Length: 252
Image (cartoon, rainbow, N blue to C red; front, top):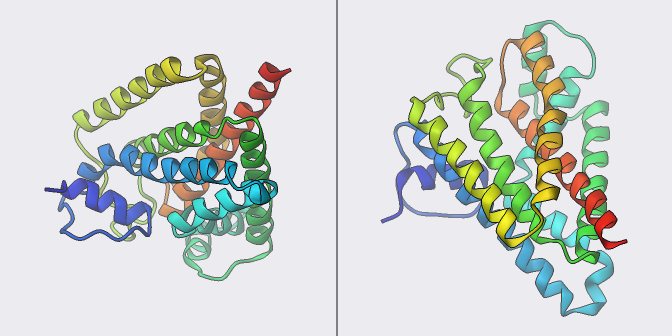
């Protein structure tokens, strides 16, 4: 029997179809975020392995894997990045900022943010592919989904009881589970790969979103689903950029 928390997590974070009923307590889905991250990351990793055997596609590996990443997530985080860039690109009142975050239209700041994010990810993925380090995509996705759990647990929700990101506040044991998951992943990276790279990539990726979270708190007093999507995108790009930089150094 598939856990209801997993069903909720998969439906929330991906477009992958799954049957069954969701959990009534959303916070019970948080421990399964990392499992969803593993699914998304492994599908990208195996796609990369497939491209290795099709030499005619290697030039476009970064683009193909990037498209797969966004297709699996339903472009969710990229949409959040666009809305967040439009909302916080200039100073607005709290009400105006929340309205822009909910507006389905994309403005100049949003388009620019999306273009930069896509290009940056394509380049990072291509570099990882050429260095045969695409397993780090999986590690990035695992950590970013745990990060989402912490953001939902620790920060207030700016819209009150509206929106998909409401209702994830949970008991202490949820936080403990997320901490244990992060610890287990670190141990796994040390066993299967280079723990030194993780020691730099994880904190730098986390620090990269700190200014963003400060802006959220200052202007709207919390986070929304779009805000978390933007933070996720920024964390993954920063994480993968550090991996590429350190990976290149090790290969020299």
